[in-house]
Image (cartoon, rainbow, N blue to C red; front, side, top):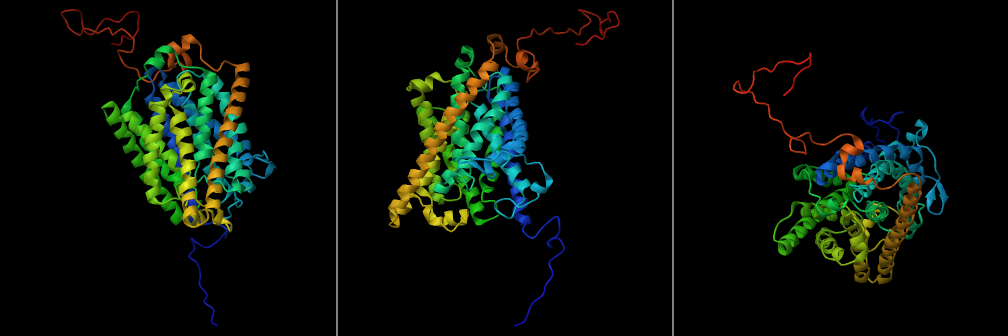
Length: 477
């Protein structure tokens, strides 16, 4: 038997910087996908939040997002990552530890062909956007100092538990076989429930703001929404942790579902309100992105379209109809309606995943020996494995109950503790003024914002030009 000897090109040959276990292509895509998700937050949601709110809250809203992004990163490398994906500490949490040592950062991560540094970065941007989504429910009245405490506390005592339980291979829901492709539970359901709960404890906006809260710049809002949508290519396309056919499927399904959801919401607005709403279309875009997230790479294209129709209609109904009828929903001032766009849409996506998950697609996504237990109910009924299908749907529902209960409990406890130290809600005079009272800065320096415009008459009939200087001062028109 002859032996063929060949030499790898120098750029592919293993060396100390690129060991044999490292897949350069997968690592490059993972870093790119992580950056796309990061751009969803900064500048995506920074722009969206800053432009969709009333003008006097533009700086505060954008800054809440920017602060959360920075604060989460420091906490993540300090202890958060190991608590979410590290060695088992207790049943639902990893051992707290730092992720800063170079020897640890360049070692193989738990999936084998990426370094820990890449995985830490990738998972950080998901943790960061979760806190920023929580902020959406609190815009226009939360004490910024209270928000500075809320971010590290909620990351530590809520997000890490959910991430470990569902995404870490040792997590109890992960072992039960829950399907959460890219964060329908960990990110969207968590942020929706936590945001709604925190909004209850913080209290409502000022009465005038609740009655009228027009966006200060709809065009900029669309720019932020566009970054959010396109960034979802990395959000769902990066979760196979490899450049695979399943990643391609996840990206396509994401955009198909989102477009369908946007169009469905738009049609409902036209039918029932008579006008195509840009803000409504943006909400439909968000619900489509959220709904497909737990299922992106494990469902067929036709299922993605159906999920888009559901995500464009059911959250629309809960927001436009049920919100005005249910007492609790009316009492809580959820500024960006994250309960409907993230909690409702995330739960919907998790349930539909339990119906439409394809066993073969789960096999190429999870790449584990026991992939057969990942099966949607419809495929279980079709293949004579109805028991397995009902079990999968039951696990999906169990995940919803767990995430809801955890976030209501932890978020309430965190808000209670913070309120012992500093008020959660801004003072009434700050609520009336907004950015200038809180930060000493305003988003727009334009005439007509409450200041008197004193025109300078540059005409020799009225006064000399240029005007005479007084006391050496520089005169400016």
